[in-house]
Image (cartoon, rainbow, N blue to C red; front, side, top):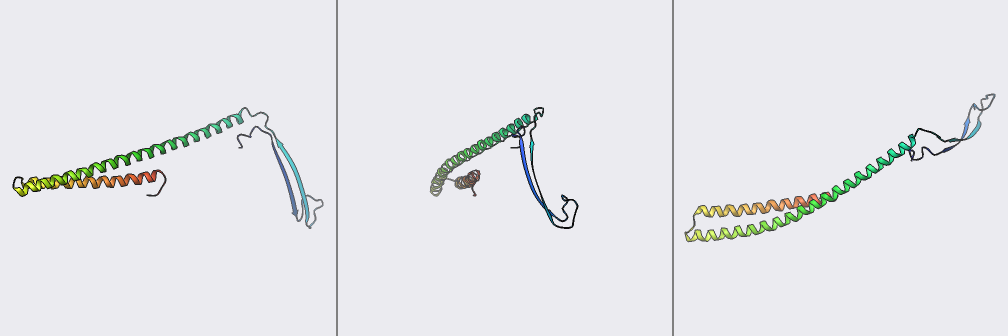
Length: 163
């Protein structure tokens, strides 16, 4: 406001009451309470400032525009981050579903190897390999479930919530 109105005339009004002992406004000075008052009006109008007011106004306007652009950039970044978190969630859910199917397949493969082992046509090494494959599939599903929860917490934080 002070930059915008720098080239405009300025009027200031002042008034004052001064009860003092002794009061300097009265002659001769006596040791008694006396009240004086004053009133004044002042007008200032800068007629020529070499373009400083105009330059200050342009600087303030440019700074305001820059702040506006920074706010827009932050908003764009926030929208981008939220979209990224949503995509991460969608991908995590799909990966978790696929890993569930992998666990089912590994469990079935382990069952088949167990039957073959019981029939005497599979080795204990093949049975152990099937156990390891099933455990790895379950471990991957657990890892993906934890990752999904982490992505959900990141999304909540991105939108300003508390996880």
